[in-house]
Length: 409
Image 1 (tube, rainbow, N blue to C red):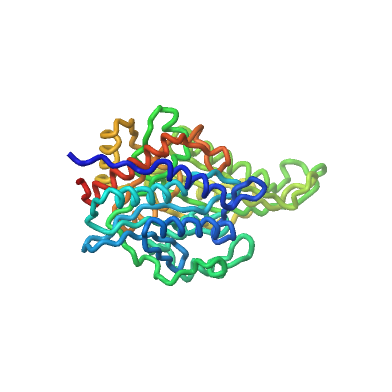
Image 2: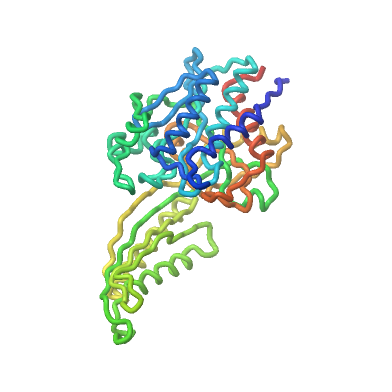
């Protein structure tokens, strides 16, 4: 019977708190990619990686890798996530996956068990995509889905260039992205949704991940006086935008699809002028590829009809398109078995959010572990996961990693 191993829970929880304090201004945590706050987080992470006896490598897109090197012909096991945040963030999103991965390596090293392959913990650049688009950029580049030079030339929302900012903060590495091709990738993460808490489950074994389609829609109408222009003679870009929103709700109602108009603006943006301009964004998701693609075609058909019925001109721009992902069945089952062995209730589930594991699945077998989020809140300072859940998730990550690398004792 294999010797039970446990992570250092105190170290994991303290690191989460310490990292969560880096990048705060006036009490608000904002650690955008390649910012000064990101540098603070990166510097602390690298210090912890060195303290664990790991070799630290940084690639050209700024991805950080802490490597436990062992002599082996087998490709490494990789674990990880990201440490950049949204604006006014919580402390667990992404950071938990990186620090849980580090805790796993430390536990294995302390046990004296020898893995059959190297083990790597990764912190990917710009997962959130707040300052530089697209999101999940570092893992996308690592997996070969985006050219590194193209990504480095990305201009941010503040007019900065990603490559220049990485160099400025000291994280423009020399290793070519994708140099480390894992045999498997595992990502522990807070759920960022309400399902586990609502069902009283302690753990989620993530089996698949929704397809994500982002589109910007620009509508052109005719500006005119709000009081003197009869309704039937108006070409109202604002009204047409509202019709798109209601169409999307009807399109996805009572289905697994979800659609969100998260940003919208009007021009000339005056209380007494009919809008001649509207711009909105659509976020459309579904775990079934065929359904997801059908929803996109439905939206396109509706926009064509709207041009005719309302007289507006419509332009669209695709901002992102990531296909649904099915994770490796063997790894998902391994996570479920690990939870069962620890007598932790576990639910097989779909991830509604995008994650670095989504990109890494292009390279190798991949799976994710979810722990509950209180009230499903994330991307918000109220984001919270109980300490016991954080510890349990890291423990399942350890047990699963141990099975993969053959350290059964």
